Length: 275
Image 1 (cartoon, rainbow, N blue to C red):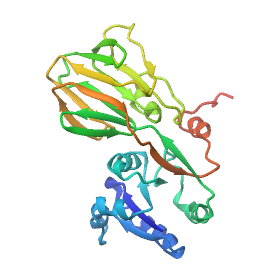
Image 2: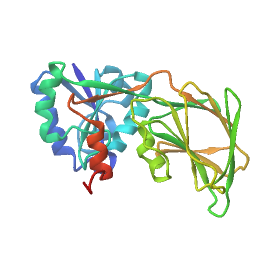
Image 3: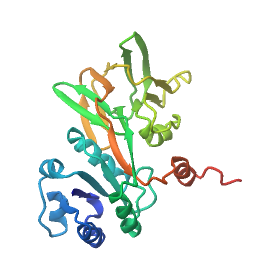
Image 4: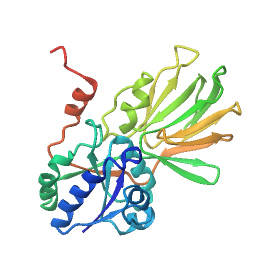
């Protein structure tokens, strides 16, 4: 069995000791460890090119936080490999394995005592590219003093023209990210659907909307100063219509059997603090 590691870019040097400890645990259980060349170079090790690593690995490991896992899920999408998130910071919505508990988890993992959650992924057709988003895509203005018109059509009919600072199209997983900050709903992550949330709309009648995952959305911005942001990590100039749909394959996340999403919500969002 082979595991492919990616480390949080901003903390790669700090994570060297943690990675080496985890590597030792994996190898003691006959799991070969590969590390992508960028992460490896930062900590003075030899690594493997990212695509080669994804091809060779049976599963991938994100060592860092939710952002590291989101990036890995998007970049490795075409390889369709399950991803384990090891949390190197505060409790995340996605990374729930603590480095201190990795031995216990890996022993259970090798016995088949784990679960794989399948999360919906967004596919965006833009020009001649296919882009993938694990959390969300955001159509936003570039000029602070101006607002933009965003027309949305579905495969059934014209939907709406949003006028304001932008529009978030989120997966259920991404509902607790920018969508939540913009006033959108929290959606259970194993459901499927698009969450459309306007950003600072000019009219208060423009409200968040949840659409079925089998809808295909066509989104067009009338102005020529808009940006398309993928998972908050990739930015494109948006100068023509995009098509948005559910990607063919889901992202597959490896979790502890005991993991409870509502426990995470209560801890992260401080639900029930007044109980």
